[in-house]
Image (cartoon, rainbow, N blue to C red):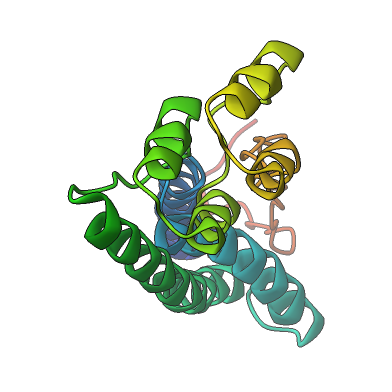
Length: 202
């Protein structure tokens, strides 16, 4: 008759495999989302992280499985974050479309750069649209003193330059923590005594 541990081994391995696959998917979603210029991707990545943490805590606190709670929480967090981010992407796209209508060409998604802002200003794009573009897209690099002087010389308004100097905070990148600790408990059944059989000589 197999030992109780041998009977539990397939269940333990199955749970460990599910947890490893879920953790790998969570890391992939987070890395992909945090590096994307789109709010929907970043929202999905950060939502998955927050949901996994909350799901693990709730699953553990209610006496359930923390791993399953983390996977369910990660899925719900990713969906919620993506939905919110998608709405923000739609607003940014509308802003770029309004600018494109005034400039006569498309405006690429992504962080604003100095030449793009100068081109918008020269094309007579409404200053509020340029400010919204910088607020929603961020800036490629912080402005140096020479950049501010250049922008003034090119006729960019002081309000737009001010927004470029104080862009929105970028979402923090994902920092991997320590790998999870796996605690293995061995179960040993009660001692077994086997009586010697007839004809046994020691």
